[in-house]
Image (tube, rainbow, N blue to C red; front, side):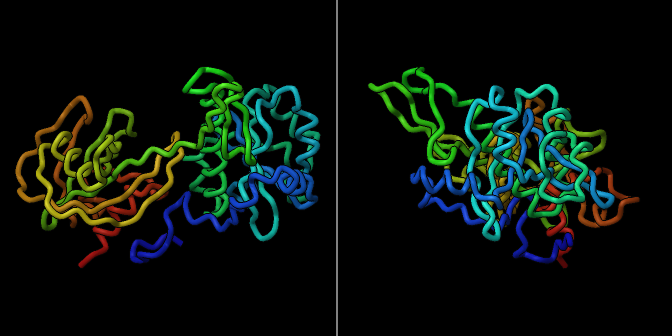
Length: 323
């Protein structure tokens, strides 16, 4: 259950209880045995969306129990072998990118779901940001992991050093250049970004971008630049986007954000001096100071807050819950 007072709970899309078995990934025989295990299960990624099935008034990930059947049915449409995600409760889990499949219903109709009660014919691809609000936390985190891996593979099919094709190795956690004179190994990318709630007494700063739903404001954020610490990034972004000088910067928690491949590192940033905001309209459509009591009362609040799956909402809720 969502609880802004619990400092130890993982953010949505994090906290996956999985054994990633990193020490075994170089053992091709071990990986083949895990792939052939009868208890192996598969998560499907289709064009950066996850395939879900309506269940119990919500949704569940369309886990497949027939990995061999999937590989046979889609053999000409798969660019890479299954990505080994790890073991959950002794069951090996794989992610398969079926982006090139056009007849999704036709493919799934001949395969076996993990749960006999699952109507695989009703499966449909859904954006993870939409699905995460109905999936349980473990399934949401699993799909976030699989989505990030599929996205990385699709964008690293050629070596960035020599331009030769690459191939998946080590259960999909490495791509190796196929050129005999190069052979560079490439590893999954995660781009660190800071996200911060800037506060001064009982006021906080929220901003909005044009892509946000009408009325929604959120915390400010930005990507880390080379040669920059996380704290320096917080101070730079706050000065660049709204013209505020920041004093103390305190870490709160983090969240994997596979849209497409970020790690959001959350902070509380204490504003040294309040006053009017100097908004960079190349970055933000608008920004404003909002009082804590306004945010606590939906009838008084001048803004709509981001969804609770985001670390932005948790940073705001934690601050509202204080005092």
